Amino acid sequence: MRLLNLLFPERRTSAVIARERLKIVLAHERASRQAPDFLPVLQKELLDVIGRYVEIRSDMIRVNLGRSGDTSLLEINVEIDGGGVKPTKNGAAGDSKETARIDQGVAAPWVRPS
Image 1 (cartoon, helix red, strand yellow):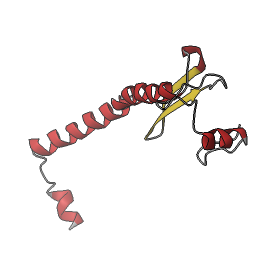
Image 2 (cartoon, one colour):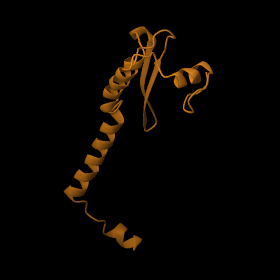
Image 3 (cartoon, helix red, strand yellow):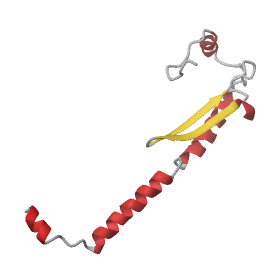
Image 4 (cartoon, helix red, strand yellow):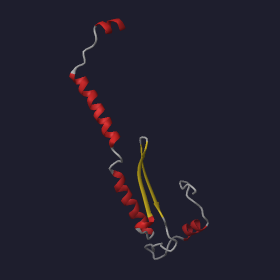
């Protein structure tokens, strides 16, 4: 069979060539994109939610949008000042259970120790 393919090669139709070119263009376009379109919107919404509970200033926020291989990365670091807790709807400064967890230094499982 190989010998026949060498003697009589298959003709590549224009559709096959166009499909290969389209794949190359799409792969190049995907590789050139730095971040998905939703990451800046997600960043703004996350900062808005944090701002509802804690007073934050722009100098207390560090945001990194990046890429690691095929994975997009959004990293937001917000410094939280101890006195900057906003009152909740019922007028209290925060839930005492949450305050106790913070005071004891118990970190959430997704927080890496520094």
